[in-house]
Image 1 (cartoon, protein in one colour):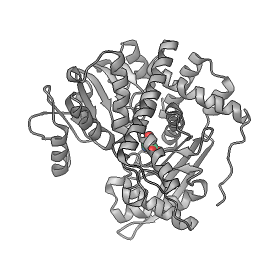
Image 2 (tube, helix red, strand yellow):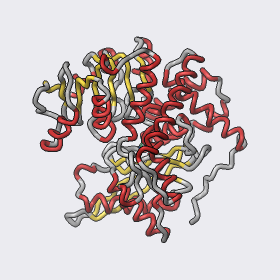
Image 3 (cartoon, helix red, strand yellow):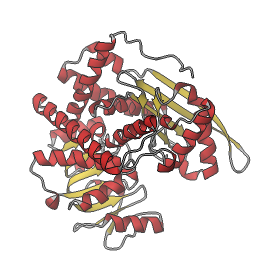
Image 4 (cartoon, protein in one colour):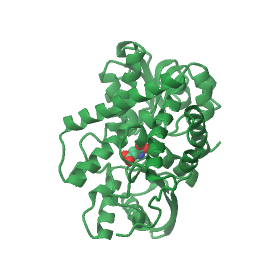
Length: 421
Ligand code: GLU
């Protein structure tokens, strides 16, 4: 099953439980617009390479399209459609006034020089700029894109429309309109969600053992935050390898080692394990912060975690999700667990629109409130419908989206035209 088919399957299950109007389900099952572009870019060695780029605008029922851009060799339209769709639900779960979108460029970012990355980014913006904008479609970082790429994105867009437009993209460095707290937002938001779940199930950090897959933006901060709260972080992994110590690791030490050597592998005081082995170790909470399809039909039988926290998008396939819920494993779903990222993106965008920047405490207080309230709403829905947390999160989102659709009119005259500047 493809990633998009997975998403549709999850949607259908939740729609059935809540008795969603079939017309609403049909509207939500189709992205409003998909754009495929080709990007001819001059490489450092003088050759010309043509990259393929995508932008999918899933829904603007509740506000402008919002979602990140990934630079990945395996990117395809199916994946971007799934991710754009999930962005709409993610924004609806946390009640921020955005719809969903997603973009990507099929390239291996790790092999490109800074100059090549800049040229790819500027070409991508030139190719999609007519359908984006601070009030229409707002991008952000995702896999293998970062603050520097967002800065180029903003610069190129501002140049094309001939005015400073920091709000066209979030996740920017502070110096060019970024927000305090955006870097740690996904991990921090996920921690708040986990804590709400733990309160309800009488779990305490001191007696909770955690494994974190993925040591990038989401995973490395999650490991540090959880360690700081008293959780035992037993295992960590990056794309190359994993490290494990039953008695706990110091994530900051592992990060220092990774900065020096390029990988977590070889960290002293830990045994080396493969990424696949790490996922199958017994633990209380398995944090999936790497990429999609990590827990699937091949390894689902060997998962020994009690709770899975999805900080990545789509790390558990629909089949594995069904199997794990049958086994009593709780999956805290991506659209809730990792929504802290887009929530602080929203704060960044608000600050850009006002040209007024908030202190960190204000961001943290506001993020906490959004994550706690959204988690409680999902947990209440779960209780009411006796369903999984994923289904409850989808129901929470569908409820808000279906109401918006009804109010706007079922033949909603959504902005499908090319945006004129
Ligand atoms: N790429 C992140 C996500 O999937 C952040 C999106 C955003 O901030 O717009 O949630």
